Length: 311
Image 1 (cartoon, rainbow, N blue to C red):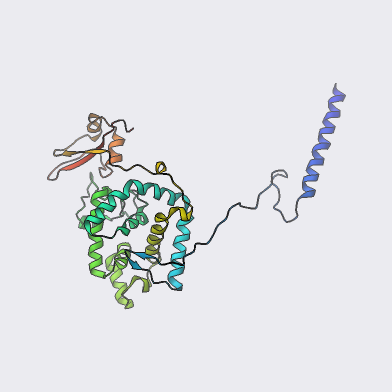
Image 2: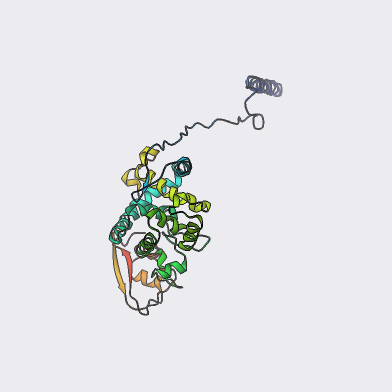
């Protein structure tokens, strides 16, 4: 038996050696080297990436983008980045189904063009995020600016995270800058860089329009990013995004509002008394940033889902 095993062992070794030799011998000299002499490294990525056709007119709030060599390149950059930033753009389309109806209603009530819902996407991807500069919420208000536009911000409450109230504040802020700077395009740019800085640079350069200003890199891209987001989210299938209605996030409208007129020392207990979890309470009311709610002069409306088995 031992001689038989030796014979088969020798035969197996020769066969393996032959296979490796054939593999190496047949390889193209221009191909990448193998890993450990066995696993091939693939150098080709099977995909097709196309340039975006921008030979059409674009606008923000009905104000046409002046198309020239400079603006075409800036727009092309933002369209390319957002069209091929698949995960972010896909999630933005899903989130829009949940939040756009509320934002659209308030924009219409406040007399602000509907296109400014895409500013919220550019600012936060429709999430209650916090930036390194401590700007917060969908509309990315800093604390001082938020307070200037009547948002309550303290250790227990941060209405920058309140969708309806922060949207109303953003509308008032944008209308103020539209009145100050003449166009919605200028108002959007001033929203990003700040009205003081925008006005200072506009006067120093002797320009009236954002499109003719030489401004910082972030703001220079800002309007074009909003316009690119609008273009892609308005025509998702043109850019390769296919979603069924069931793929999109549900509209957050199946709620009831409880008016609170006295302090709540323990929001977790309060939530449990209402038949919901503490997480559910915070999910529907992200503006409640502490574990308690002190009521002094104001009253508050807390949303809870009709379906108490939400979680």
